[in-house]
Structure formats: C-alpha cells, structure tokens
Image (tube, rainbow over all chains, first blue to last red; front, side):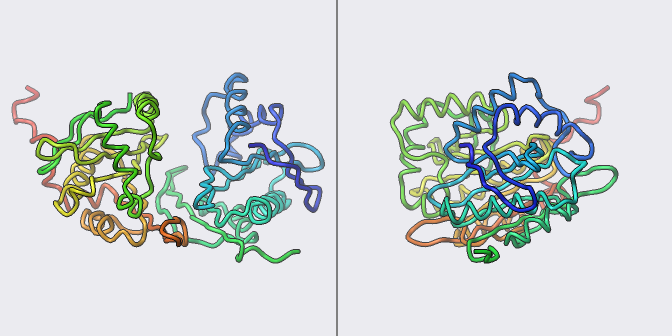
Length: 180
Length: 194
C-alpha cells in the first residue's frame, strides 16, 4: 500500500510515494555516500524494473510505503514492510537518497511520523529493524522514536577493510515518546 | 530452480520435494502442535493452491525447499533462504511431523543441513529464529553450536498470548571446531589430481 500524507515539523513530510519519486531510488542507491551502510551498489535500475517494483509496493497488502519530502522535494523513502496482521508486527526501513541533506534531522522526523502512524492508525503491536551499528545517525533517529536494542549481529558485512555489525531494534506503543 | 537435492544424514535424508508430498505439508501446517511450536510456511489450503506454491518455490532463486524422509517415510520439510550476497543461510522452517517427534529426526536433519551449508556450499554462517518457549528446537540448535544474538520481545502470537523470539547464529569457525569430522565427501585420494 501507499501511505497517506503525514505532515511533520521542520519542512519534513511523508507523502504518498509516486512512480516519479520511485524512479529516483535507483540513481540514489548507486551513490557511494548512500551505500556506505547497506546495499551492494548494483542492481536493475531500469525504468521498467522501477515500474514493476513500484506496482508491487502499491499493490502490497502487507506494507506501507512513503516518499520523504523536505521542503516539498522528494529526498528519500520510508515504510513498514512484511506486516503480519495477526502478530501485528512489521519491519521498518528508511533511505535518505539526498546525501547532501544528511545531518538536518530529516530521518528523525520521518521515523517519528512513521512510528506514530504505526501505533495510532495501524494499531500495530511492534515494529522492528536492522541498522548498521556504525550508522549512528540512523540509530539515534530510531531511538528517539522509541526503538531499543534487542540484539547485535556481529560481522554482518565487510567493507573497506573492516567488519560492520548490525544493530537490531524493536519498538512498541509504550516506548513511543508521548507527544500528543 | 530452488528445490533441494539429496543430503544424507544418519537417520534422515533431505531430498527433492515432489507434488505428492504437498498433502502432508498441508496436514502439518494445519496441526496445532506444529503451529504452537513454529510459524507456518503457508496456511492450510486446497491442493491447487499448494501446487501453485510449489511451482513458485521451484522457480525461486533465493529460497530452497527439501522434503525430509526417515525409514522410507516422509517425515518433514525444510526451507532455507540463501542471502542475496550468497554468504549466509537462514533456516526459516524445519518441520517434523508431530507424530514423529522425539525420534531424533530434527537434530539429524539439522546437522545434515548444516554440513551441506558449511562443507559443501562453503557459506559463512547459518541463522535460526525460534520461539522462546520451543525448548526442543532450542536444544537442537544449541547442541549444533548456535548462540543467541538477539531476543525479540512479544514477537509471535499464539494460544492467546505473545511469545518472545530468539535469533541464533552459527559461524563456520564453530562448525569446524565442533563438527570437523562431518564431511560431505571423504578426502580426495593422494593421487586424485595426478
């Protein structure tokens, strides 16, 4: 499914993902700055593939997908995936494609909006994720929205001469900061 | 594409699944004993739906399905996921017919599957996700050499309550320390490459 528009603070909003937005995903993910903590930096980035994947996202009954807008421009994507409607659990993810905008709190606000939606609109019980342990910015952004560490997957991937661990987080309605 | 071939254990054999196995798969995922212990691969369904699922998994490039036999009978199935980058393997389902529990089939099939992953495919690690109250499965993977790397709280829902989930992993180094005598093939003869 495509998520509804959620307006946040500091010019950040989650907006319904469009095909035009999604076509930016391929070029963004091939940038070394964006791919430091995930991805192989290759893949099928053809327009046909983007259209097919977009349709899969839109048709999915087990995911919610948004574009992240900053000052009304698409700058990344976020979503909740593989939602199990019995367990009421899903896996969350975020991707800021515009690396020139890192450090402005865009991810923190996007995660706050997404997590609030999970509790207040979807009535989920839990969301969880995997984040590169060295990606402090992403980890902190998730912690601010109530994610806590449930584990550490050591030596997950090897890059530039070092092993990278992954931080496993989980969040619940009762861990979300009360902002209402 | 991703139906598994023969892997021989001492009591069990993982072998190529066939359509005739699907009726038993359906019966197992409908059995509440199985459902209390594990997440199910698919919900119970009509034979035609199972055939579609079978055709899909056969074409899947990352997921591998095996049927498990013991004493000439079908006693279970295993389903694993090969990581996209090809160096790890998640065992997503290892189901033994509940009428065949406590005969050592689960451990034997798991050991054979690990031997295949480490000694044949040369992968780096294997992972499991198990319900925290599934003592039998936890005993099997701990005996193999798995260690916990994450503990999810209130992850699965069954029998009117949530249950925690334990994530475990076993690395190739552990396999080599504990199970170095387990090999897919005997050592090459001294003159094999002459």
